[in-house]
Image (cartoon, rainbow, N blue to C red; front, side, top):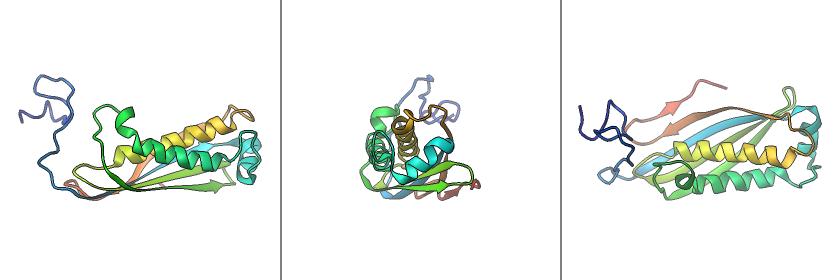
Length: 165
């Protein structure tokens, strides 16, 4: 067994205690990750969100900022995540009128010693939670669902592309 790992888990030491992985020996390389999340809005919220007619104001603008801020603050929210010098964040929204859902996509880029998957996932979750918060006065029945890593590139493990749509 590798003395730096416990049963193959990199965030556990040889005694099984949580630890932050030492990435000091790794080269900085370009990293990118894209996470996707969707939120079911329902027939009451969906049109008002797209038309910008919500009691709390522009939910998409607030969600975009929340996503970016969450990316930047991931190490303060998720234990054992490294502070990473983020070089870019894009938060995009894709409405689906047929299913009354809003797809949220967060793309994160960095030049770092470790990946940015957690940053992208955290950004997508925070954007969805902000949409919920901005719209809950109209309907609390919204459902946040299907949060996943859509793709990532860079690092030792190489590229990854999820098969979900």
